[in-house]
Length: 430
Image 1 (cartoon, one colour):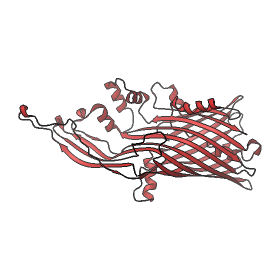
Image 2 (cartoon, helix red, strand yellow; image 1 turned 30 degrees about the vertical axis):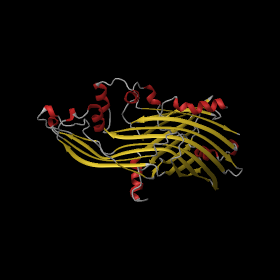
Image 3 (tube, helix red, strand yellow; image 1 turned 60 degrees about the vertical axis):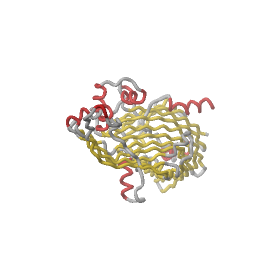
Image 4 (cartoon, one colour; image 1 turned 90 degrees about the horizontal axis):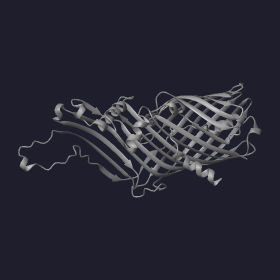
């Protein structure tokens, strides 16, 4: 057993991946509730996944930027012209361990521990141009890198859940609630709300305009399990099963972390023109700093609040009387994660949360397939952090003890990939 758990803990570091939305166990139980013999009293499971995805930047770009190597002008042009004006990179690493207990009246009590790491960035093509080419090739142009954001989090989550079901004639209501304690390790965030650089012809002068905010937790303690913040989160879901149809509404991980007063909040806001240096006598050159823009931050130590990504799902499923395809599942997924609170809880915060999460509402269509020796899930998804259609594929044994899969099956067949994902889950029932 120790050997199996060790493999599960290390697996995410050995595989590449993207966003993972594993089938929620609440959904499975809601569908099985009409068949009590199919349900055991104890469920023990562990789940690991790693996802890395981009809407247009490829694995070639990421490998070159992260691990070095020679970058040709041709590669730069391909990256700059590869997609949208806005470039997104999202990565998540999660390890989970959970236990569920079912009482005789179909009431469930659960506990789940999660170790979560995430990073998300959103930046314009103009910033990519400035980074890769400098400003020489853009004389007479204005490079706009406004609305650039980078956000990284690491925390542990201790979730305690309670689930019960109500029968009403042919209807079965399954309701699940959960409360989580969050132990925050580290948070780093930079927002360029406004930023632009104009380079005059022949480089005679530069116009620079920027408004930058940053928040980072205590840098004196960089251990993986540092206690720099604490917070809470909540879950709520309800499923209505009516015959072969099931409708679901799920809100997961709606919460925040309060970071301690040793955290750093910094901001800078400035506009200026740089017209160069006039030299009349080479024998008495003035002191010169080769940094054109000397950005000075105003810093202070203060506590602040950040949000973890809340996941909102609306779903519909129908059982099928087919030899292989056992059901069809349709769902929309949204995320809510604002950058910061501005003046309290209000409509502006609610609206910004969806926009600033960087996640475009996705649409999923999945079906479970029962074969002779194994079960499988095949599905299609659009939206999320990436463009285009993604293919979900999983394999599991007939008892559901072992499951492995990917959310980007189509990317495995590409030479230069924009996204990769993989996950593995072990579960036992007794």
